[in-house]
Image (tube, rainbow, N blue to C red; front, side):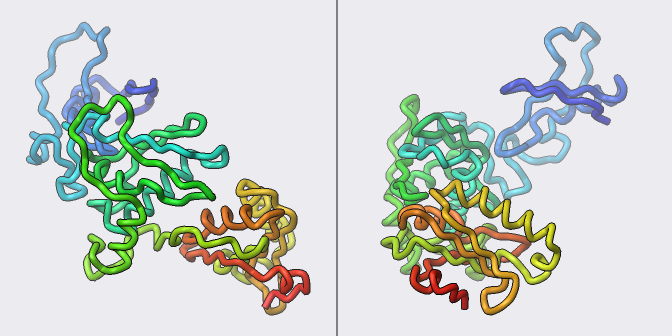
Length: 305
């Protein structure tokens, strides 16, 4: 019934197939979407007759402010300032997607998310800091425990933005939460201890051991058969992995003991550490990637076993 949509920052306009359809769409007022309840109404220039309509909650029988898709966990009365957090100490290579994906998976891993899916609905990067928006005030409070989490060679500072005037929220740091999770004191919300979507996050960074990174489970032998596809894979891998540091060499064996593995040689050990921190736990075609250090001497011997 909707033939066109025009988005403008914090609001949008939709065009319907007919006047009757537009009247019916007014009943979507209050429909939950990405952690907020959308306000659906006539534009200010509308001068036609008033149309009787209901709210989405009245139509569905769900209480105002509750999203039935997540068991009533998303609350529209949470002001944005209560759902927004400041993320400091970011670096230029950290994109909005990377920050949102990394922090969201971290919350899912240690039980800080109170519903399935990434609890971070938006991320805005500005120089050496960023702002993330959570889908609920409760999850924003939980996310404060991500303070000091290591990412791409930096320790992110997570806290309330300066405009926040609400009550102080007691919380720990990432080290505290990770220790409680590893000891079993914090339980995952998923039934039976099932790892939530996104997989297990890599532990805090260890001391860099090598300039060479070995990646497993990213490719299959089928991926390497076609020459054109192989070249595309090599090019894409080089472009993606160059974002973590100065990449000197990429080796993707097509046969022998190293087939399906990817080897990355960086200029420094710190560059290799950033690559591992970013790649570990990613998924490709449903396979969880494993990224580990490889002995430089072994790499120089072309021993890819």
